[in-house]
Structure formats: C-alpha cells, structure tokens
Length: 127
Image (cartoon, rainbow, N blue to C red; front, side, top):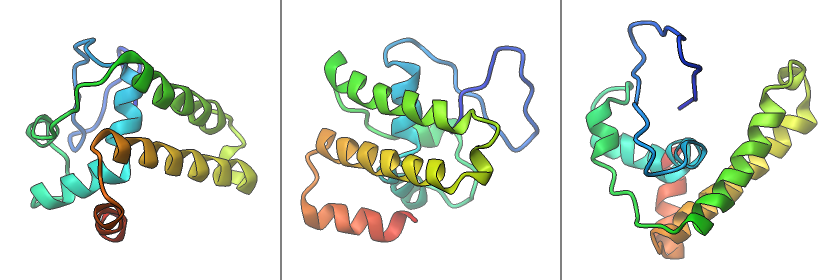
C-alpha cells in the first residue's frame, strides 16, 4: 500500500482506496502494510492483486486516537527515511525501516489481542 498524491495516475493493476477520514491515513498505511494484513490478504484472495472488497473484509478494530498515533508516528519515521533519494543505496536506513515495520507488526498484533502462537502462524505465513 502507498499514499499517492491527488492527481496521480496509476496503471491498470492498481486500485485506489478513497479515504473516509475515520482512521488516520498514515495509520491505514501502516496497518495495511503489516504482516497481519498481508496474511489476511493471502488467506482471503486467490490472486496477487488486493481488491477493495479484500480490504473491506478486514475487520478493523475499534481504536482510540492514542493507538492510531503510535502507529502514525512510526509510519512518519518510515516515510522520512524512504522518501530520501539515497534510501535504496543505504543499508542502514533500510535496516531502520525493517525495525520500524516490526514495531508496527507488534502494535497491530496487540490491537487484535493475538497470542504468541497466533503471531507465529501469521509471521510464518505472511512473508
């Protein structure tokens, strides 16, 4: 998942999601790129293209802004690293992004109260 600027056109294999405002867009970016969301997509879709109905099928937890803000904060750190034109050649920055992605995964697991056993299943099958 990615946030694209208004007026950006995507090719035929991409889908747009209109943001309703109920959740912070950066929270959704972090959540939809999490290992749990990836695992759900793999379990509920028969193709490699995530469709809007696939996203709609994910039960988003009822969350307070504080929980959104924790993920938003990390997504902002990831965006600041990945928007750097030298990111693709900087292994240190790439390692930081991986670390931040793991932190988001842990937060998402907590939102769903997953057990350690369930987390292992997700992580084994989401990559």
